[in-house]
Image (tube, rainbow, N blue to C red; front, side, top):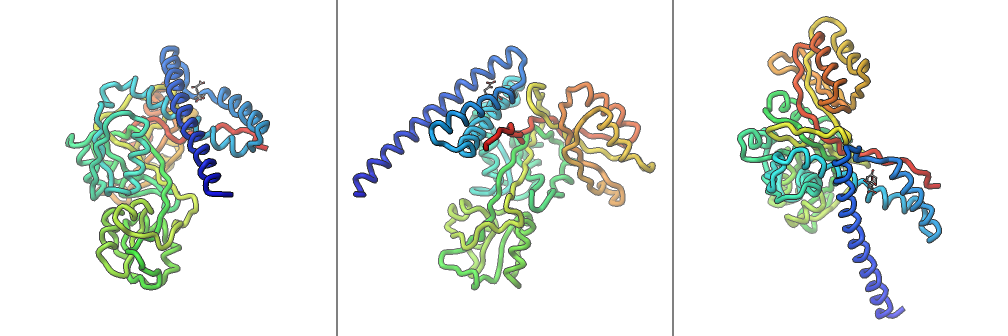
Length: 386
Ligand SMILES: O=C(O)C(=O)C[C@]1(C(=O)O)C=C[C@@H](O)C=C1
């Protein structure tokens, strides 16, 4: 096959890909039209029956074109997830017109290429407006800038599939004067990044934020005795590696490329599926529509009598409220007492939640609502791809 033939074929592929983008943009515009109807008629954003019918039809049609069901399902689950999340964001903007201005000043940990920056871009890609990014060197600085009005939102990593909960953030939430107004998950692909021509065998020092050290502990054990230096963010770890011979940093390949570091080893995390969940905080809480899946997060300190925690949790069960997270942390100033961080799959505006919170008073010293927000973890509809 001559180069001309190859170039012609690639030209045809470029044409088709451009046509696909035009159609996807058109589809998104129409989806925005559907959400106007749902707002006017108070309909749930998610219509899973419609999604299932759509996928089954597309899989059948795909098969007649020689496209396997797994491929068609994957492509359209991605399209549907984007459509639903955009619709939810539009609905929330409609409900909170003042909260979401045309400019979003957002604080997050680190700088260019940090995982927090990637998560920030993902979350605000569905929220139109000018994004002003403010990189910070600590979690306290992130919330501090939100509290004093220097930022509209703060993005904080709160848990990871390899290293679990990020306790520093849970402890911060006990006193920070902010509300959780959103969440976003982002995959985290840790790489070992070093100056060009650095061999793994030459390394004497590794720089990283505590989270990557925890998430890549097994890989690091296999490297033997190397000096580990903890940094306040991935961005600062990269700068340290850049300026230290025979050293490396843990971060994303993109972050390394941004500063001139090369990947000398990838896929370092203990879990192959390594994702971090971030919360988005603001000074004021948002109203959350009952037309979308919602979470409510709270902190509670149970009373000291035996069984108080069990009694408190039973209240949620009696009101048919599903808990999706329960985390205990030492109470500030009283390390032998615990406070419990709870994520409910519920809307604070629901009467069931209000009744449960009222009954909770009998078994708790205090309950503090951290926020009610749109759940971004979408459960894809299950369709037969056989
Ligand atoms: O048809 C609808 O109800 C839509 O909102 C459109 C759409 C889609 O993107 O196809 C999006 C969300 C729904 O769950 C179902 C389908």
